[in-house]
Image (cartoon, rainbow, N blue to C red; front, side):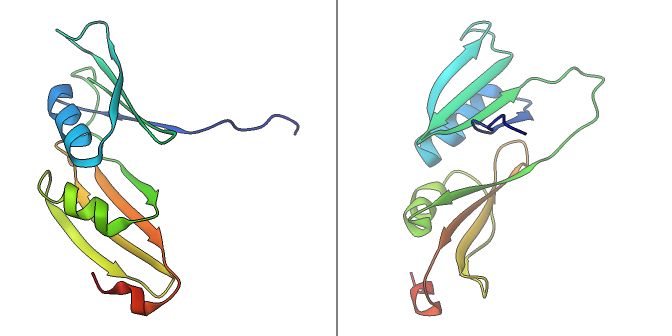
Length: 128
């Protein structure tokens, strides 16, 4: 196959796009890229930071509930933890795991799990 993949956008349902905006802008420094059809009554939200795109939509009332989980890779999980911990419930971490990653998990306003992961060289780097 000769076609290249150019990126991945995660698109998840959200009950309250304003709450999602506050969570990701205040907790993770994302920027609002798009609110559609308008900022007054959005049905779709796109957020961007460092080449990462998160998209949220207001689901049709007949759609079954859906909760997602995604991993944000970073070069400093503890710095992101320091900022993000005030914006959502921490489910676990930060901890350094035997597979060489320091990670923590928190939930956004719709219960989607956000895992923040940093590759580390040794267990010694596990200490905050």
